[in-house]
Length: 353
Ligand code: PLP
Image (tube, rainbow, N blue to C red; front, side, top):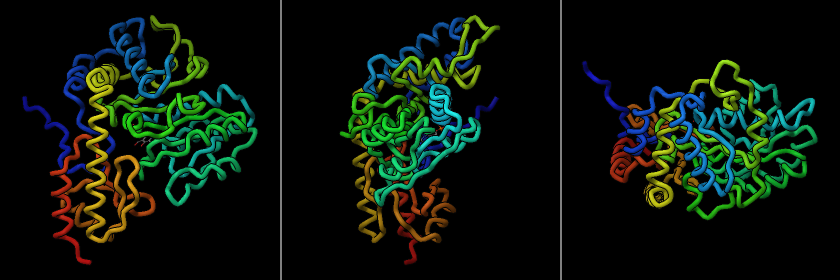
């Protein structure tokens, strides 16, 4: 029987997923049929999940982490909103988030019946703290800070947003779904040790090089996780805090294996490689006269004419645009200098300015 071709990453410049580490790929295959949703029955994968959560705690600066491996950042963000809503118990709950926050918060607000108050970002695409303060009130259950935004790779002022949350009596959630595996090496204030952060999203299946689906959700306090738990009468395990029921043992085992292999030195090396690559690519685009946003974490956003963008797409480059129209290139582990050099060669061929 012919096997399906593996996912080709050779022209993918827009995705936040990547080629998994070989140890993660191997672990995913071995745990395909196990269900960490029932840890009392599937004990080996439950132990791996415990180990993965411990390592996520180390990465984010939390010594006694409470959390689990989610099905991606969307589940983690929905659950962070749900936990805050359940713990605050106000009549008309709202969440304050910068407009750069991922669309998973729109889903969270919709399914949970919470109002989402999106506040502007500043000219550097980071959350505007004054706007967040003005939007927060007694009904705010959660303030969101993004540490590594999806479009521009920006890190919001986490300590200042934490102060806004405290003033409003709300929780502070950091969405580091994409940035979390770079930030320990990037000299930013973003983690549990830097500010009174209550919860965090950090996804092993993005820059952690695990297999899909492996997101991560952490709470500083046990009560954050407990606020999500329901009784599970027919399982060996008696309660469950996850949003999904049966979930991927492959994702959990891959997350543990990838972090065992790469934390901290492998991730540090990859951060340094990606940062250098992004700086080089940004300077190449600037030399060609394109307007390029400052690079913070390794995402390059540049204004290119619509016709040029479309020609590159027709040439099978998998690229995307920001909401404001910039070409966006995410320097994930599978993105190499050779790939970007080939992209620039096509760009030079197609450029009609
Ligand atoms: N948060 C951020 C900052 C993201 O960039 C993304 C996805 O790119 C998500 C959350 C959602 O993650 P997922 O697609 O794994 O559900």
